[in-house]
Length: 251
Image (cartoon, rainbow, N blue to C red; front, side, top):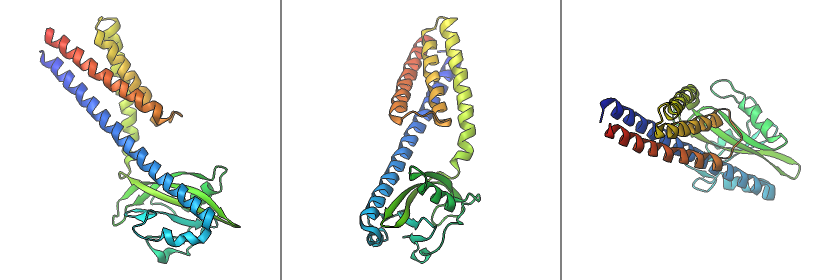
């Protein structure tokens, strides 16, 4: 087998490996966000049914509502924080002026989300993890809850890698350019050189381009659609590697 062909096969395998890792990392993030969203929705339902009577449950460490770095907080929609399990001394403070490490007015934005037409939504901002000083990306889900004449906002958040977005967005653009280039090269090999594996390369990397664009733009497609498409592309790439290996070995 020619050395150049072997190097190409190894590079393709490494690229597929990296993409698969990214795929499973994204699945984990989606699952974590679904967990937080469900927690907040259930907490809001408890408030709607029982009002302030559930606040003591939210403060109970080791409960469903407060464990590890996960907790449910509650504000009145005028900005007064009424439930804050990590530090009960912080309850009663007006949090309207709360900002993140970059000055993003998250206090106002929390209230805006709760008072929006949908009454719920995600917000992303920079915040240090407990016991750390370096900011991480935190995503918090906010949902409104009304009991009697009092309006509340309920929230909970989860941390992701430190300022991942700062580095990931440029890498996503670079990946799209690289994938489009490889797709074009595969199309050339298939049409001009009559190599069957060229069509496989084109098909696979065209899907990768679509997948990355869908995450970057984002295109309004469900993960249930994107994930199977990505998996098909991965299987296609493995077939390409096999065909390429056989072709290179035969030569």
